[in-house]
Amino acid sequence: MRTQLIKKIELDRERLLEDLERSLEINFAEPYDEFVCGRPWKSAMLMAPGGGEGGVLSDYDHSKPTAFTADGERLPYVQEILSKYFNLEHITFVRLIALSNSVLIPHCDYVELDDSSKQRIAHRVHVVLSTAEDAMFNESDSVYRMKEGEVWFIDVTRPHSAGVVGDTRRVHLLIDVADVDDIEDLFKFPCELSGGIPDANLCDRPALGDAERDGLLSLSSIIDEENVMQIMGLVVKKHYRKDGGHNFVWNTMNEIARRSGNEAIVKTVEDLYRHTNIARIESALAS
Picture 1: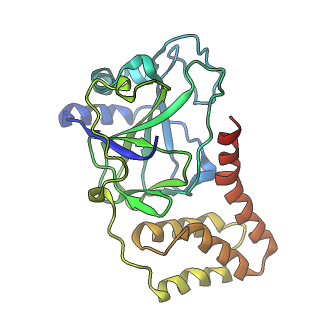
Picture 2: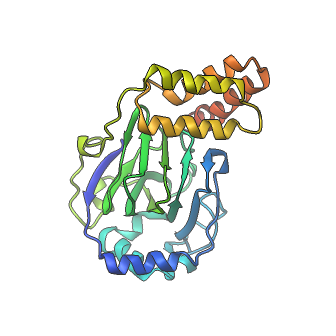
Picture 3: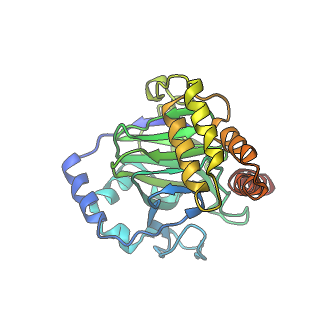
């Protein structure tokens, strides 16, 4: 399913804020640190097969129906949102995702379960609980914002990233759902599929100027093994603000590495790209 807006739902802001306050007491995991430039990408499992704890790749008994975890039980309004708007029998996992003052490297996600699973993850859905203007998303060369209350399909097989370039605590529900014959069966509301990223959600980014591009490329004089992720973060943040052209982030990082004259840095950037993009696409195609 391509990335697109599904619908905007009405949220009870007062009750939601109470749950978001409760969520501060949850012991979030910090997975996917290889993607992160800045503060950790935090994840808490709210629904899983049998209500078990762990991450998506944990060894769950998939013969058991998906149920709320202990952390999920602590958030009554979030439970109500899920029960009101989604057919729970098609949900495989639900995670609460929090991000602040951090950006993710553009990457593709693994297909996380094999074909033998009856609950194979077929679609990934985001529900936006809390956000602001400094929270943005990227797919390929597009940068966009998901707005509060919006429900989205996200095509995680395409290069994508997320970031908050400020102190906003951006909180989403990330919902993995199994395959169904009719997409409408996933929801308890009529879908209003946008067919792609709506123009109203796209960020209006001016073209990157020559001086800014030269400034980024001059980082080749200081890049080393200790700061490569910080420099990657600067390039990703610039991508959120300015249009630098096709495949800007990786083209820029490859050029910075090349100009450094350091073969170890060249290999580090190449390996990072392969791990976060090529290997993941190959995994999806092989599954």
